Image (cartoon, rainbow, N blue to C red):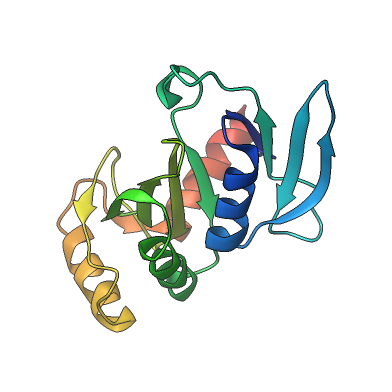
Length: 175
């Protein structure tokens, strides 16, 4: 089982569509603008109709924490994360927080309507969670890799991700 999509209520429908299109590269696959509702389906994957659904109707006095803790978007690798970070820096995103969990490199941020979101990619390591340490995504990729590896090797539970994945697979097989 995997998470397939998330839907969020928004106040400014068009602004939020443009934010996710221009900043994270989503495209609109379907949209309805009617008297009954405004709903948009967005994706970054041609094989998945929608990963994000935006629905107009969020009250102005309701905070994002009342609906969703965070929206997380996975990218393939560190160069893709650094590219997303550069776009976020130039966008309406707020509270950018680049970190490593040891298992991932991540950047957390708030979108224009204060929804908490994350763009991340996996690292080749596993460490006991929760864990967070600040990183500088403007550093060269080889430096980030070396600094992260040096950091995680000293953390509880350190192992390579492939070993951790095999252990989880064994647990799942035992049911």
